[in-house]
Image (cartoon, rainbow, N blue to C red; front, side, top):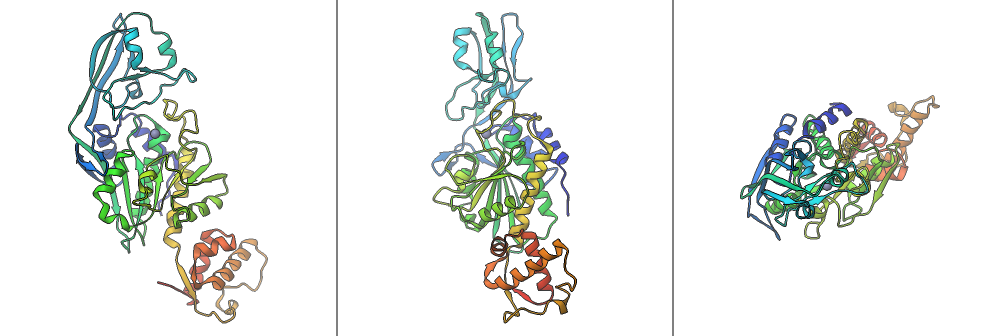
Amino acid sequence: MIEIQGKELYSLVEELYPICRSITGDGVRETLRKLQKYIALTTHEVPTGTQVFDWTVPKEWNIRDAYIKDGSGERIVDFRKSNLHVMSYSIPVRQTLSLEELKPHLFSLPEHPEWIPYRTSYHNEQWGFCLTHQQLAELRNEEYEVCIDSSLEDGALTYGEYYLPGEIADEVLISCHICHPSLCNDNLSGIAVATFLAKFLSTEARRYSYRFVFLPGTIGPITWLCLNEAQVEKIKHGLVLALLGDAGPSTYKKSRQGHAEVDRIVAHVLQHSGHPYKIVDFSPYGYDERQYCSPGFNLPVGNLMRTPNGCFPEYHTSADNLDFVKPSSLADSWKKCRSVVETLEGNRTYINQNPKCEPQLGRRGLYRAISGQAERGQQEMAIFWVLNLSDGTHSLLDIAERAAMSFPVIKTAADALSAHQLLKEKF
Ligand code: ZN
């Protein structure tokens, strides 16, 4: 089994941090190329203008440089220092403007004067700069030279997909967004955890097939769902991964179904993690679960995160940086994701082969003559629960919940009983 360390997850975040991503363009392609060093993902290019349900694949945006120069020719706002300085999807511009003319194009955060906000304008063709409030306050009444060397042209929407076949065609979907520029928790933490989860699963025996998608937010899953509508019914469980690197406790937002197997499994994993956590009901706002859980699909896809979007001041600002995400939080999120897939894989239903009274466990070495060790006591208790509830109507997760024991303890008991022919899987 591969053990993933926080520093590996963190170094992938570091590697992807400088790239200027948006919902289309070369930043997304470069990001996916870097992920291909870890997993053999396939990239897809969907042409501008493709109709996807009620939406149209937009023009492709690329940027080379951008700045605001003051009267002395100094770059006082410089894209090369932070790609957040340019509003994403800004149309090209080269102009000399007065401060009054420039101001409607400038965005800052008065409440956090040292941070640069993150702004986008995907659907209105305009241009803008984001800067710290301190920078804004220092602007004098003079002429400014403004340059955004960008292009907004017909091209493609790029996304990445990594499919791992399992014993059965039923799929687990793991989805993350890849459309934010230098923001760490929002997009890079999810990308890193998903990539290492995929790498881990590629070396494991798999019952389910797994599909990892790396997509621009909103338009990405809409495009993917539209192009893959015929296969969507194979998705039996799914998770959107985002915001997995901050120091806050894990938060799970349930699927629209609310009581899907994945909802119960994530809740179970968090409950037995030994850490504080929060579970919240589905709402039609947030990340790409909005599309997967739209009524026409209603897929069992939840959203695992730490502190939710909009609930931390660094959200969508330059302060969501390499200091804000922690290797230990990334590692903890990764471990929880691994536990979720291990539980999904192991959650089977069995039938007790000796249902009339208890089988004699001592004779089989399943019950120790000398008791007393707490851990062994728990394992024996798990054996009794599994034997009693394995009547073909309770899954191992049902039993773990009912016995208030962790899934791995129940699974170990079921494995031991199966090895002694006391249990048979129900298909
Ligand atoms: Zn975001």
